[in-house]
Length: 287
Image (cartoon, rainbow, N blue to C red):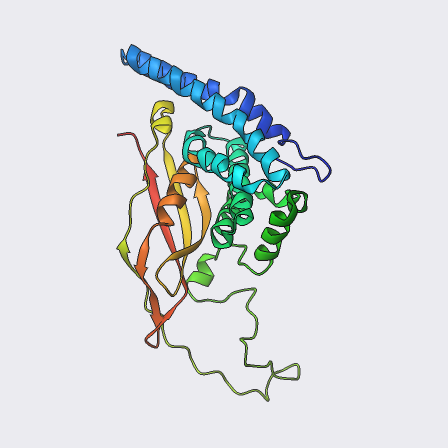
């Protein structure tokens, strides 16, 4: 899904997905239900498919409201899309991740436009983690909210931590900590050696609700795995969430929404709370 700088329409790949792919996917689920003798289940699927088609039409409505900078009207629409459409995106290909990233982007803009900067930045981070193509979104086209979101994201972490970094083996983007200066000279022989850092005591989970297996995913018969990375803040709350692996966009969505609600006893170093990173793996199986 690529955004063209001078075009504000829903991206072509998203339109293709909105137009027909969901019906094809849920038709597979309908076949499974009918094979199990569930005519009532098939009727439920038909109603569900109709509701999804109606929700897909509201993506354009949300975009238009946000382009007009009517954030108060746009936020309820994007909230409905996140609550009801996102859990139903069950295609297992890149277009599903692009559409999911598009929904997160719209919701981020609506949140920032109504003064919820922290929540908006979290959703924008998830959008970029779900789909590389959302980085091309012309945020400036969305007025003050878009400019504010771009400003907030400039000072935020925009990548996941590698296994080596998590193991404490170095960060390629490390800078000299504030209050210290790099030694002069090529060899660095005239600098004082830094004292070894104390080990970090890992965070401890205190509240960890499991991700839900959405009804649409069950109907479609999809299974898979997700690996997510959460930044555990000094408060014990989960900040930025990265998608390291996801076999389906819907699993990334429900997993991130669950991880966001997790609470920890924070990691500590020298007895003081410190920010750290935590990876989780979740399998979604029907049996």
